Amino acid sequence: MSTVYRKLLVESSQLIARKHITNKILPDLKNDMYESIKRNIKDAGAGTRCWPPANKTNDKKYGIRFDWGPKGIEETTTSGEKVWYRLMDLQLNADAENEQIRDTVSKAKRGTHAKRMQIYIRINEDGTLHKDFRIDHLVRLIENGA
Image 1 (cartoon, helix red, strand yellow):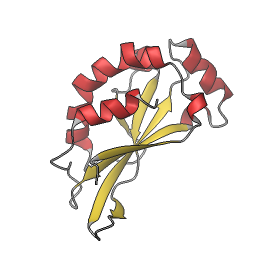
Image 2 (cartoon, rainbow, N blue to C red; image 1 turned 180 degrees about the horizontal axis):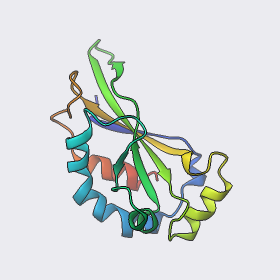
Image 3 (cartoon, rainbow, N blue to C red; image 1 turned 180 degrees about the vertical axis):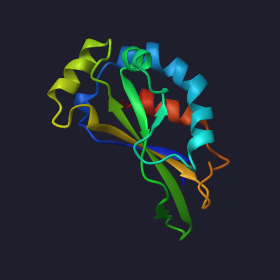
């Protein structure tokens, strides 16, 4: 089973701000997010911020955030092996510098609480990060589907 996968919660035609994501978000995300995931994946409460750190500067600059979702989502592989995942939800920020992101938030039924994507990160049964997790895999998923 993969150590990380995603589910888009919007139609692919609604994917936004590809250039903004590639140029402004992914370089910083790749450098900073792994430590945040590793440090917080076990104990962070659902709905708390994973990345970027919560402040007005980051919310404007990036225009997106990843909040922690539920812990311990259990799945069974075709061979019968049980695997566990921790969810992260991608959401947009209303005060983003990027106009396309701001417009999308203003039109969304749930505003900034609308989930655009869910990321499933494989964890061990005790809630710690699985040894095979690679930040590059996560970055690629985000790049291809935010």
